[in-house]
Image 1 (cartoon, rainbow, N blue to C red):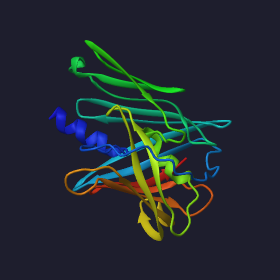
Image 2: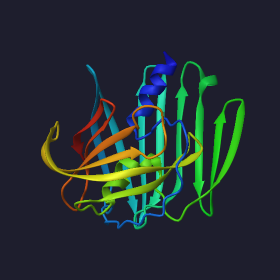
Image 3: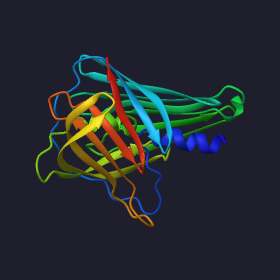
Image 4: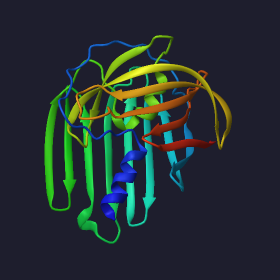
Length: 241
């Protein structure tokens, strides 16, 4: 049961379970919009088959430093994910994710990441600590903030870029192919909204279909995430505060 709950929680944010060969680091460039200028609390309706739950993300902005966080309670514990990054470059500063189990703390785990000249990762359980360091490319975007940072890219017809993404729970840097897929009007609990649609697809070699996600953002200067889809699981915007 715990393993199933962990899998469900991890799918809520843009995490892709990877296998096969990791692609080479991308040198693609991209322009960035300034969309992070005020604090927000965004509530989403998460749907999977007939299951519906609420997920709340907090975005805090301090000058050009942005922090995102989400806490999700489930039957036996809580999942947490946090990211801090530069709004002008989208380059991350730190990240954290983990699970805690109220009835069985021996199953608790946390992964911390610090970005600088290198990416330093520390994974902790109650009885073990592991550390790993990776070289960083010139451009990269943190996976824990991907839902929000993908909205900050300047999209136009024909946009297709390979973007480096550190996956701290995999201890690797991979590339995602990010493709602009045009405009759509979609219905979510928040209302009927004009959106731009973006596809984010793993760019390495895997057996079978390549994992991919779709994200819809308001078609304006705010670029608020309106909907997210990953293998049949949806986040749909419910409220903005």
